[in-house]
Amino acid sequence: MNITSQNVINVQKINTSKITDVDFNNLVFGREFSDHMFECDFIDGAWQNPTIKPYGPMLIEPAAKVFHYGQAVFEGMKAYKDQAGEVFLFRPDQNLERINKSSKRLAIPEFPAELFQEALHTILNMDRDWVKPGLGNSLYIRPFVIATQNGVSASPSDRYKFMIILSPAQAYYTGDVKVVIAEKFSRAADGGVGAAKAAGNYAAQFYPTNLAKEKGYQQVIWTDANDHKYLEEAGTMNVFFRINDTLVTAPNNDRILDGITRKSVIQLAKDAGINLEVRRVLIDEIVTAAKDGTLKEIFGSGTAAVISPVSAFNYQDTEYAIQKQEDSYATRFKSALMDIQYNNAPDLHGWRVKV
Ligand SMILES: Cc1ncc(COP(=O)(O)O)c(C=O)c1O
Image (cartoon, rainbow, N blue to C red; front, side, top):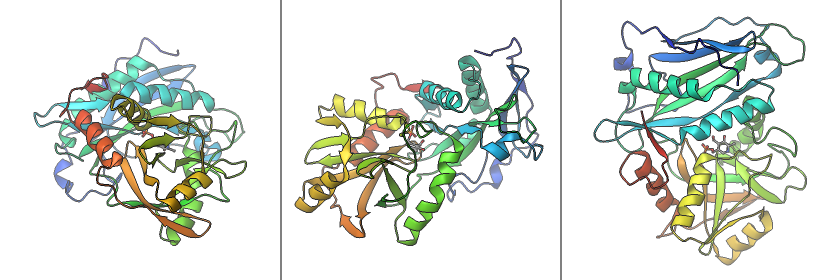
């Protein structure tokens, strides 16, 4: 691991907080940022000069490789505040592990675990007031790495910037989500970068998702790139299907992002004794289940929305509606997860980390 002896964080505080300018009751997701940001440069083979400073624009030359070859990875995580004003993270070790896995796939040097932890805790303590209490409120945390070496030759950068920015958030989605099942476009292919949280994966989804939006759907459920026969995941969520009382989700592979909410739902399902199958899910099977009434629920899992119930899906230009369940798994998992995140329930698996 490239860690230097210089990993003492240099802290430059803002003079006046801009928090009073922000309307916390009308937040648009990802638009406002807190007072501070963290940055650390990879130069001469080592991560150095870790700094927390006022959030603001930075100077990068147009020739920086990130602009030309998309050598960039990121993470998405949240800080939550309980009634007593304590701030918590949810499984932050998993985000560090995943950003380093993503980095490795994009030939970016890994970031040291200790420094990541220290940076997170320091900046969150400085910007603590930006984490508002109340279920659904959170401070969204966006760690990311970009290639900053100047030069337009198609080769990995020898300089990088690791940054953390923070954005106050309310509940992400309002209402249920309608999805289109991908029949032509693909998000990821075998051997590609689907399992990495690579910036380019998201850019590639925008056009097909816009087409879905034009038809009145919010998201696309991606299918395998070979035959478009198996359901994989949504744009920013993993996907679960409830057939009768059995919960089914696709296994991880190199096309799917290994979601932290997904693995938590799987654990909670096991804890609750729910019959769970982690296996490939054929579209035909879901269409048949929708027709014969055995498809009880589809829901997405992800940090931003926690759990998003899907109210209908479109496949081959036919819309299949999913009736609301009284005993909804989606609702159960959402409250169980939020209870852990907001310190309202015992943390049986050691997922909650106090800041
Ligand atoms: C493509 C994709 N799948 C799944 C997820 C859900 O992952 P997590 O539960 O770790 O937020 C995300 C969000 O990070 C994502 O971008």
